[in-house]
Image (cartoon, each protein chain N blue to C red):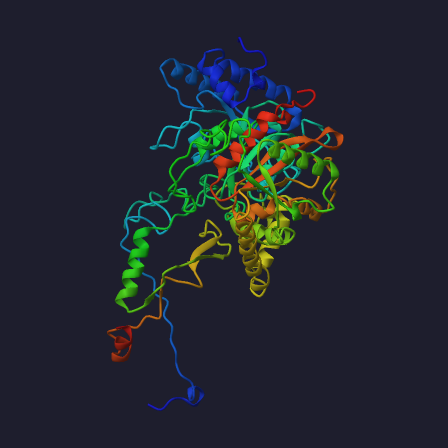
Amino acid sequence: MAAAPLVRGYEVVIGLETHAQLHTRSKAFSGAATAFGAAPNTQASAVDLALPGTLPVFNRAAVQCAICFGLAVGARIAPQSIFARKNYFYPDLPKGYQISQYETRWCKAAGCPSCSASSAAASR
Amino acid sequence: MSVAQPERLGVAELQRALSARELSSVELTKHLLARITAHHGLGAFLHVDGERALAAAAQADRLRTQGDARPLLGVPIAHKDVFVTADAPTTAGSKMLAGYASPFDATVVARLGAGVPGGAPGAGAITLGKLNCDEFAMGSANENSAYGPVRNPWDRARVPGGSSGGSATAVAARLVPAATGTDTGGSIRQPAAFTGSTGIKPTYGVCSRYGIIAFASSLDQAGVLARSAHDCALLLSAMSGYDPRDATSAERPPQDFSSGIGRPLAGASAVKPLQGLRIGLPREFFPATLASDVEGSVRAAVAELVKLGAQAVDVSLPRTELSIPVYYIIAPAEASSNLSRYDGVRYGHRTSHADDLLELYRRTRAEGFGPEVKRRIMIGTYVLSHGYYDAYYLQAQKLRRMIADDFRRCFQDCHLIAGPVAPSVAWKIGEQGDDPVKAYLADIFTLPGSLAGLPGMSVPAGRGEHGMPVGLQLIGNYFDEARLLQVAHALQQSTDWHRAVPPGV
């Protein structure tokens, strides 16, 4: 099929934002449980509610999952990673910021071994 | 009560009197509660719970008869109101948190008192109440509290310093033998200097920040205000140590900071206990603008240290002045993010009328925060915003590293650094008017150590203009609190400034 005149000369690049729930017993930044199907409000801790004085502690199992995933897709694993705060006001954002990764994330430059031979080769 | 004026006893003396049964914790607590009522006008306390304190004192007395010998058992203290407490409201000096009830105790509070639930037993101290402070610990005069100023017991028309002004006044006015404080840019050292108290801010990471209402997370650190270095050491030993709930807490074994107190430094003699100690005097800490009374007292205190065997050496911290703009970018940046949780949705103040979500946020925050907090939130939001981040925040972070490197170089030539805490003695309440920059500039000598994350102390060093106290600042290398306290104690063995009692107290 011939491309429409408007997109001729352009390369189509599609980015995907994919969310996955990790198989950890507790949340990424608190000790509260993550059991699926539990009663509402039974898995919220003082840290999750952003009560004054609380501090997040990163879940070791979560970073292990991230690194395993990165290895599986041939990503470069960052020896050092930095969390950043993404600030905005929203009622379901108790701290007023997300704890996210901006400059140095755990995994970078992944290929997808099952997608194409070239990226599989690159990931070796 | 067989002890006259028990309010004059420090923590170490109280430990002895309590264990010798010369005094009961109930007698002592009653006595101090009466003093707190009598000195209500100083504005030091925001909350006092006499009934609860007396019940805890009675319990401590009972436990003692059963052989309990925990270090601070039955010793009454009080906490700056930025430490959350399950038994008393926590306001951070702000209308935003009026009446806020925390479901848990800060780690520092628990360790000094009953212990962390499920963890080791605490040191057994009794909490008399919560102490006034600048709103969200932002200020150097305790004039920014939503609950009114704190007065300096040496001259009630003057400020006690800030932001731990309530802690400093309560200790100096003999309302408590010791109190907790927090120090972000000088908030323990400067009020200690202004009130003739002894204060220590340990290395960043020594005390857990869990349960401290965050101001600037990369700088906030808990510490002690007391009447001697020895007493500071006793409290610091109990409240410090690794806490898995604070990811920036230092993983180090528990330390008894009082064990070296009263002993000469390694290789020194009893006559010259500081023999071999090299004390660096940064030339930038003695500028022409330094008040002459402060300079005189500080130099006399250094001379005293030299008499005890120390050697004074000339060092340089070339970026001392730059620490002011660096701090006043980094601290507001972190504050603007940390304070965004106060939105009226879950706890704290909420506006009584809002038609939509944006209005709820706007009105809640406009009504709940005071002017200095708003100013810092605006500065912080500005320097973090897209397009300005690289020019302000990133530059400030780079300079912060260079300031830390300057200290690293200094510590190749000396063991600790000495200088003034503040460029003048305490000023009059209201004297600085509406110019916040004046107060910011007065933080010049405490900010460099804060930015580097180093431990610092203020030790009473004399009296300056109008008879107001002057503090000597001692800055140590990372995790060198034990030596700082040892040196401060040696100075307090040969000077009496820390024993001076304000008039009318």
